[in-house]
Structure formats: structure tokens, C-alpha cells
Image (cartoon, rainbow, N blue to C red):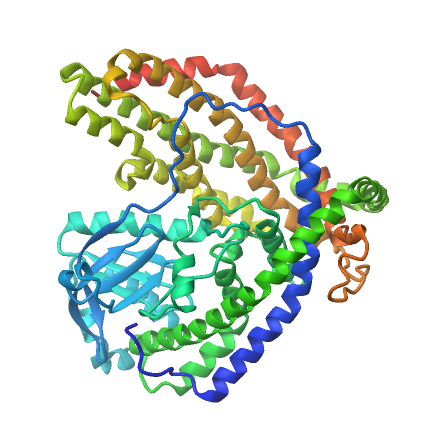
Length: 608
């Protein structure tokens, strides 16, 4: 995990990995070009649709989604053989963790001992849980464990541990000095993992950039490090390039027989593609590595993770370089596509409508049979489970904001001016970015996870982590959207009641819209890949693509796969909307938003 003097991969292995990455890009990029055209058509088509009126009722300065920077001493399991070593750690706002030999080294701008982006990591806070994790990776006999001197250090009692584990990256083993410090680091690290998974580091074109440095060595040098300072967004960009990339990943996976699910698209573009190749290589790599290692049991598991980390680093560097090399071509292609699609839009849309009608006539009967037999019996249960998750999360946001306003009102009555008041107003606006305060909302998003996963399992759904992250992001976004950072402290006392009403009104309005959209989108994510696989749609009707030929005709934006997907999703959404209207309509008739608002307001008065 430190700066390695040399790569553990020999030249043959490095050459083999380069060939495998290049093969992945040769398959992926032509499909990506085609999806860029389809994504551009969708964006321009949306521009022609009626736009929803702006509903913002509070003026506020937009905060960039971020992790609140955290720093402090942690003890790190380090070296060969491993031993516990004091370090000073810093959790950056972009979701990267860095560690230094001591605080003075950090403050003077010295070199890090190590650094990693937390994409794809899982945090464990139990020593027993981590040891069981190692045992599952490399099952051993009791005799093997008895010989494991190098890892005896891990079997000794560790206070306040923080274990960061990953399927194919080296594990990070820390321990905090107090229970309070462990909790603060746990909340910060969990937020960083979520941000790295659902966030996108954007350039001007809306493309999601590749991973940053690790082990103190940046992948792309100074230029690459500078690019990482671009603003991050909590949700992925809706720009054509970003949408096309995710569509291409899903298509790439479907063509290899993998089920749907957004968990495979967590991370930056380079991280997602690297993870896709690593998943393909993992069984062979793990078997090959375990045969060659002399260690046993848990020591072997950690050694295997370090070797896989080196493989992943090489893959990520090569994928990052390939995507950067493609960037100028992609920018030029997007500009030409926009001109071409806008010029031929009417003709393209007519062709699309004709294809859609033909495809719908072909698949309607088998689709209807699939929906009746497989989807309809489970749809109401899954809708109720999703609504329960999102409504509990939104209610937690409502309670948090009401308590924050009550606290602010309390301080205003005691001292309606001064530095303390300004700090309270500022902290009120910072609620969405305080991991301790938002923890109650995030817990609600996790609460029904196992039940929902059980309901979605028959449909091969692999996106539970993405779904939970999405609900947590929704809580943070709504809280931020409903707060104002431009409140004049001198007028706060007179405006507070008005602000309270506006915040609750805004939250009620946005919650209704968000509840509908979140539930609808997640239902589509659960059901449509399953329905697609059940229908057995063939890709043979696609015309082979010749590089540089994509602009020859505007209708290249219409792929058979894309039109067929739109048809299936459209018919599936009719089913989903009908059931949602039935369930939400019944719920709305039993209780009005005004009653909800008043009940929450009255309940919060007792908290002050």
C-alpha cells in the first residue's frame, strides 16, 4: 500500500494485461460511439417536450456535493510482516483518503505514505467480521491458521477498528484511538464511499473522469491531478456522453449474459470499465495467485488482495489512458452529432416512430404474456417496499429540518444578533453536509434493504447498493434544496416563521415529485433488464459499424437495440404508472400533505 519500488507484475503479465485492456476498448468504444448518437437524439428530443415550470421557492447558493473533510490520527496495519504504525489521516472532499507519517508532514505539504480513492470499498468495524472475511476468501484448515505468524498481529485484540475491504484492491486496516473518533471516521468514510460511487468528476463536457492517485503516485501526472479538482456532482451527469457511457456498459454486460443492475456502474468511467474487466479476470487471477503463494490462510488472503491491487492499478492506468486518448474524438463527434441530429431531426423521429410501431407489433404479445405471468404478481409488493423506503427517508429529512428550524428559533429568541447567531444560521444551511445529523436519514434508506432485495431477487436484480445510495443521495439533495444560505441574519427573527412555512411547503412539494420519480426509476431498473432477457431480443439485426461512418446518415442514432429498449420500457412504464397511481392515489386520499406538515411541525415543538 505504500509507494512500491517496483511492480509485482513481471513483463509478461504486464504485456498480457495491456492486450486485455486494449481488447476491451476495441469492443467497447465502437458501441460507445453508436450510443453517443442515440443519447444525443434523446436529449434533443427532450428539448421539444413541454418543460415543467420552475418550482423553486427559496433562493439559495448551490453547494457542491462533497464529503466534509475529516482528519486525525489513526493507527495503520503496515509493512511486511505487518505491524501497527501511527499515521495521520486526511479524508478529502472528493472522497479520497490520504495518510502521512505524522501531522507535521501533512501540514508542511510533505509526501503521503499512501492515498486511495474509496470507490467500491466496503467498511467493516468489527475485527471478527474482518477475520471471517479473510477466511471466506481463502478457506484454511485449523493447522494452517496455527502456522500464521505474519497475521498473529490481527488476531490480537484491536480497539475501535476500521477495515476497508474491496474485491480486487488491497485492504486497509486502521484503528482509531477512541470510540468517538471511530464513529466520526465511520460516518466520514461511509459518505466518501457513497460519493465516489454515485458522484462523477466532471470536465466541461460532462464526462465522468477517471480515478485519482493511489499509493502516492498519480496516474496521469500533474495534469491529471489538476483535473481532479473539477467540481463533483452527487448524481451522475445527464449529459449525452455520460448517459451514453452508462448505456454502453449495460449493453456490454447484457451481450455477455449478465443481468441488469446499476451496481456495475458505480464509480468514474475508468473505474467502471476497469472493474468490468477485473470481474471477468478475477476467477482465473485468484486461482493462479493462490497456487503461487507460499502463505497460508489469512496471510494468503491478504497477499492475494495485494497482488490483485497491482493488477487493478495496471488495468486502471491503461483504461484511463485509453479514455483520455478517445476524449478529443468524442468531443468532435458530439459536436458533429448535434449538428447532424438537429438538421435531420424530423426525419429521424419519423423513422424512429415507424421502427417502434413495427417492433411493438412484434413483441407486444410475448411482452404482455411475460408481464402477466412474471411481473404483475410481484409489482404491488415491490412498489410498497420501495415506497416504504423512500417515504421513511423523506420523513426523516422532514423531522431533521423541523428540528433545525426549532433550534434556530430558540437561539434567535435568546440572542437575535451577533456572531453566535450567524454561526447558527450557517450551520442550519450546512445540515445536508453534516454526516452526524444526516445519519438518521441514511439509516432509513438502509432499513428495508434486505426485504426489498429478497423481493427483487427472482428478477436477477443486482443494483441494491446503487438503490440505497440513490435514496441517501435523494435525502441529501432534498435537504439542501429546501434550505437557504442567503438568509439575512439581521432580519432572521422576522423572517423565521415565513422561512419555516416555505421550507415545509417546498419539502412537501419536492417530496411528492421525488417519491414518484425515484420509485418509478427504480422499478424500471428492477424489471426491464429481466423482461429484456425473457424476451430473448436478438442483436443480429444491428448493422455492423465502420469507424468514421456514424455521421453518414442521421438515422445512425436509431439502433434496433435502442428502439426496442424504448418500446419495452414504454410498455412496462404504462404498467408501473397504473399501479403507482392506484397505490399513491389511495394513500393521498387518506392523508393530505397539509395534515402531514402540521403533524410534523407540532411533533417537533417537543424536541426543543
